[in-house]
Image (cartoon, rainbow, N blue to C red; front, side, top):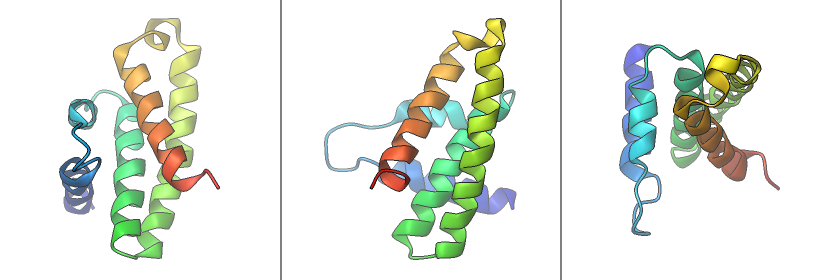
Length: 107
């Protein structure tokens, strides 16, 4: 499973927003944050669903949707904690989940 996660994250970093002159270096930073469950699940949700959609693998997309739910719960917990609520990690998680929502939740 860890190998699959690394593949999904590498695929996301290599392909997301390619060709429009912007990158997503903060996703790499968030992916490397091993202390935050919010960071882990936010990046995994986006990268898993992104990989699944581009490779037409609905089962993988569904796994990303499950991770999205976990990431939202983790982010909600972090927002309840005054020590974490204003952290850069929480902001980056929210940005990552916003991208997820644009791609997978919006009509």
